[in-house]
Image 1: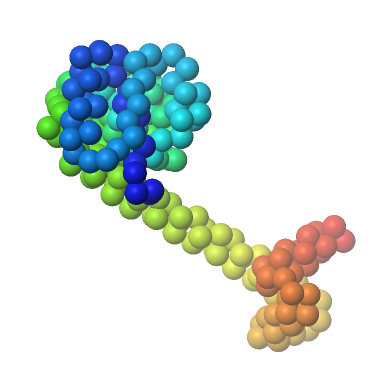
Image 2: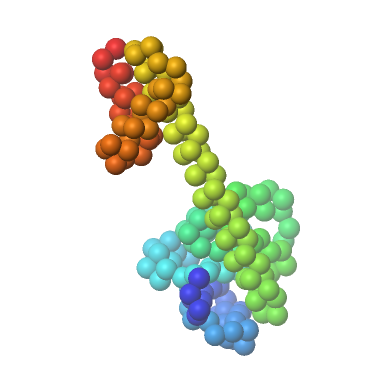
Length: 194
């Protein structure tokens, strides 16, 4: 995150929006913008590319909430949703959509900063977990391809597993590519020849 956070507040009520903006400006040196109309929200947020999005909705429907959450890019930035009433189904939908904070009892100016800080921290934690999960899945896929390539070499050349692995590794080093790429090429070629 940059030193000066850019924040978009989605709030239809002008008076509430002014209270929120004042509260944010008292809490820190933020670049705050307000969007009062949800029409074209996704496009406007994408154009403004804020660091954080705060959305205040009094009584959203599940569809409206999911649409707002997705329009605000919860996988790209922290998004905090403020609603007036508790609803377990809506809470689950918002969290599944990637919302970092789902706050019941509306957006009160005195609670904005700590909730925003928590949403940012949670967003970063989940971003790190998503990155680690992606890396783990990729490593597993590469491991499977390498194992298949070793099996092909063992069968075709009568090698044991260590010899097949060493041959793949040497080919990768000679070509200056990743071991998984050599293995994928071998598996693809074997598939074409079978």
